[in-house]
Image (cartoon, rainbow, N blue to C red; front, top):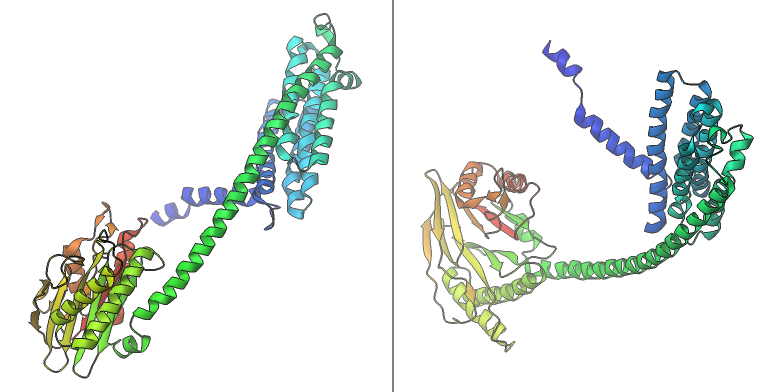
Length: 484
């Protein structure tokens, strides 16, 4: 019984999605890639108006059938269905001018013929209102060509508009030809032709104002489109420059062969907020040591990327001077070199800097030495997760002779070490739109530590994306996991 209910349940979401997609597909019938935005809007508007009128005509036709009205009335609306539905069809086959002519002229003509037909078969309903009301509809419908045609299509616009004006001018004659004269309203309407001329003059005055207003709007649209194209070109140029900057920044990151050699015991999760990043990482290996570091420079994007290149240069020169064994000494020399590079600008207002952590692992003794500024080291053992905090305060201008302390941790095979910038655990998301937080981060590290390095990378990335959801990424993300 339960399965039967599920089988025949009404799939509201899927039907709503289907109608949305169908509306979008019909609206875009006849569009081409080389159409400008202004002309594309005309085609979409034509399709959408035809669908709306088609839907209304279906409802009215069903109403006529249900009320038992004269069959001729039903035929008029059936004819309207065919005419209106031909509009998106002609757009689809590429005859987009004809489709707009059909919609621009068929609707006013239909109003005239249908009102004449109703008055002919029901003369007792003819009164003063039946003389004026159709004209109001005709005046409104006469503006359709001004809406569907651009001012650069002046020939088509004038033709359709002229046809609609003639319908309004000779409205009385059409009524007489169809046997739908004024009837009982004749004593009330003193000069029907004067009323037709007055309606045409009123329409001409309104349409002239509409024409010049539309022309001014078109000029503004052309200017806006030009500015948008200029902005898009500038954005493409900037993006090309940023992409090139990304290639330059890749130079300071570890070589692929170094990471490939250590792939069974080390992984890197690197997710820049923008194309280039203020975070970067360093991995080096010697005969006795594996050194890995995460550096989080001030800012992100292009400013952060420039800082990362300066910081990488200072760090690499420091390691070349003192070797891989003493992280605190490496950090002290890097701090001094960073100050020297930044001081060359001569600008005392520069306060940018970086947070960083350096780990040096001895492959023979399984001893881990670490030092850093503002970032922590997480070690996962059988007893849980231990967090080792480094010195407070990031590296910045003002203390070139600063000293850093070294922390020594004795590890065993199977233990895991993780270092990360704050971009991972500061990410907002989840059910309550909160940060991941250090506690959740530590729990996640303990949960995944038994997996291979590749699976750990995938688990951490999947958890980050799932937590972030539809929220935007708040910062660059750089994380290294190491297996002893």
